[in-house]
Image 1 (cartoon, rainbow, N blue to C red):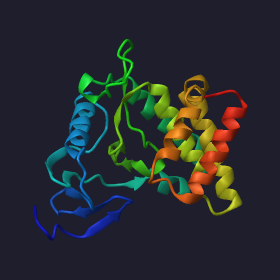
Image 2 (cartoon, rainbow, N blue to C red):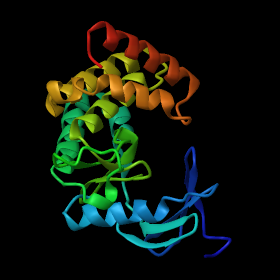
Image 3 (cartoon, rainbow, N blue to C red):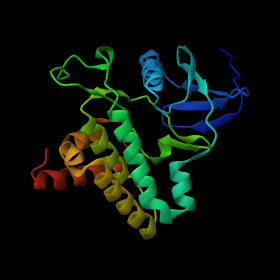
Image 4 (cartoon, rainbow, N blue to C red):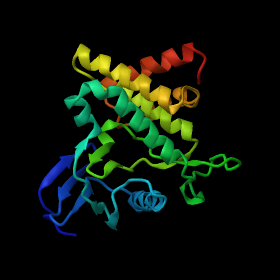
Length: 230
């Protein structure tokens, strides 16, 4: 693939995204990414089930070429219209419920997975920055962490991520709490709460969790343990 792919349009913790100018983008990881073929395979699998993801065109080493999705992120929309916070929380919950109905094939499951019960496809990073509000509807991006497992874990992880995301103002913190609790209600409190402790542990074990987030996650983990949830 070209060494000069095009204009840089986004940069995340592990990869950069370039506009290739033909309706596609190149996401290039800065370091080796052994699971990129798996990520592309998962995206194609959920797309085949009708779930809204960018179409994947090619995978090569640290490079992934896929459709460019036009539109703001859900977080951008929330920032522009904070009074729609509950509506967007409900939308995120419905997207995740829709994904949870897609059974994970055996090639997605870890060796230790409980195969006596059907396991769902889990995004494992579904939050407002990873949903693009395209003209054709919401599209979920960044499937780097996707795997198979119990669907409630995905909901709990989203709740933990949203709850512990660093905010700057009291108004933002109020909106954050409203979004998180509205998401939890629409996603299903029982399903989310059953995996809250495990989701906190997952975030604490993730080297990409930022220091401020880590403090917030540890505090939430302590609160969850105090309620008797593991």
